[in-house]
Length: 156
Image (cartoon, rainbow, N blue to C red):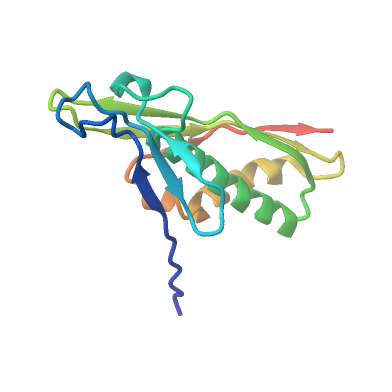
């Protein structure tokens, strides 16, 4: 039987510089992202859209969410398969395409995890589990573009 889970976030625009959105150049894209009981994330738009480069933008967060979800599923599957992971780092990258009307969408995200496993762990299993993690990841299953995996498995 399916179980429902609810997640909440409050996004508060903090970029009013006194005149609201009276002009496109006159307002800031800064905002705070608050999830109950967790530290606030300081967000903005991508610098290409007049945002603050020192803050996370929604596009960063989408790529990070895909990467983190994949990692968490992968670690779970490795533990269940007796593959001992001792280090994991993913250099994920997303590709977004914009259109003449200003809209756009992500067309793909590629995850490039570098995974270190113990010498007595099976490298073939470690590599294969990335496909299963991708199939199980809640975020990857929710997007309408491909999420590719290009893992590197290192035996310590």
